Length: 396
Image 1 (cartoon, rainbow, N blue to C red):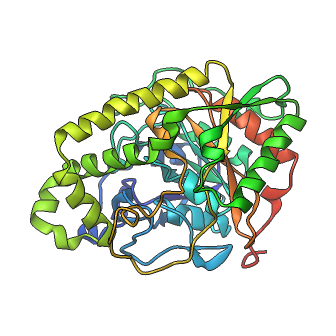
Image 2 (cartoon, rainbow, N blue to C red):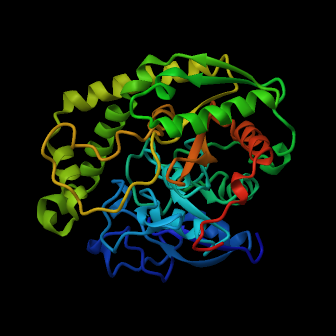
């Protein structure tokens, strides 16, 4: 990556450079060492242009403390979160590639809304040393790029064992680019019925994703429907973990400085602080059942596919009050959580536009350490279409 200009999410510590986590609590925090992923990028020759904005501490989807990054396809809409700045910067051609972090979908979410490729690697493939924590068993660092090949190059630069992260794989990192161009004839791909047919998927988004799935079949893959009943509860189960664990991580600040947090973080952290232990324990048990369903399905299929999100980018708005159960989540239409709960890799690739002309993403997930297969599928589809060549009018 010699000379390649990159941007990194401000969730990663950077030596001598402010690392705020998107929060005013850390407005003056300057670390004295780099996160491993930043050190790896530098070792690969990349040029770090700067840090990108994010939702506060990367634990919510929309609420920002340093203004809101805008979607280059429509500056009145969100870029997606929590890696919003990385999505906006890459989509606006401000950098060649970028890094995000994905606990519940925060790489794939901005990727789908900004018309980009976003990969959540297998948990344990990329070091999290020097990364501000969300949920320790789901936090992952990965690329947000304009093409599948760019994402493969970026992942190759940052992946690999790091003894400072005690939960990492020791397996050698393959040459991900070698998987590109192999085609997908003979691969088996499962379409998750519960996600495709969800009422949370807009009709125009469903149509774009269905056309993409048809395209995979035309490229030689065997495509079949598969039912994962527990996928329907992946959102609330992930939401429980995403409330309780950050609340524990931030317990001292929550107790002493709750007013220093922004709107969505205050709600999330206070809620997570009072969720009973038995509910957290139940969520972990259901997570394991979800994981087993996903892994069992991936015993029959090389990959599972469905929409990354059920709708395109939404208009920027003031943080809304929570007035009911229905308004307690701002992201019910985000379908990324299934693979986080299963500790599996997943990629979002552009597959068209909705009726407003906003990007739509196809999500491709696989068994742990099957990134090469995901790159193979994503690249084959990408090269058979021209979605990755489209540019926002603001940068065309």
